Image (tube, rainbow, N blue to C red):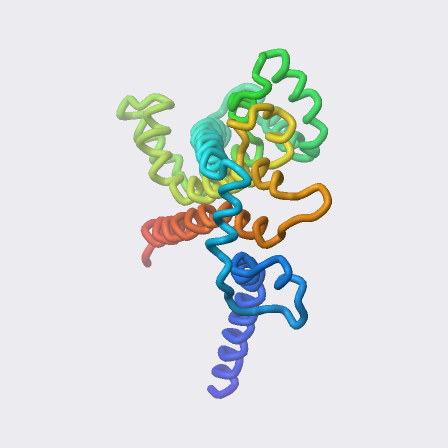
Length: 275
């Protein structure tokens, strides 16, 4: 009995230590956002909050159009996430529960595209955007990202295990077509998969830097990552100001994670099978 309690105590101590280590970078980010740049270089490090936060934030607002970049990023990330959830879930559901000619071949090709580094597609993608006249517009950020191979693969794997074929057969007997089966049968079951894929896609679109840097030419359409990069000086950088802007950019992702994680856990608990 004592050995079991000791192992449990050590397990919880290890988990607590791991949590503190993983949380420390974010704590350090918050502390440094309340300090001056000179405090960042002081030794020993300043591990408690200072009083420069609002001054740092006001300088961020003066240097860049933070509010405009924030809403640009929110629009792009939200649009990409909604489109990915819709199209990837349609394709994943079809791959999981329907038979059609070339299904295995198409799925193999889909998996093969996941092996190709995204950097290799930057030049062809830019040429396509220029041909369509989309350079400098939000279309160049939203349309190419509205479907991805990982999302299809993720939904396919989840749907194959969680959606009973008998349930779909019953729906077909009631006269349901593909879209009605998708909407009334598949979507309620796929909610936990949607929670993960939605958070994963939104965070990726929110943090995207390279592609917006290439295709956006109008400062009024800059996303947060591009706007924040303007805080870096040519000869010196006010790191306290940069860190404060970074903290403001990260906060929406933390709020999203807290909301999605609660939804994810509640959906799993609701779908648990009791003996």
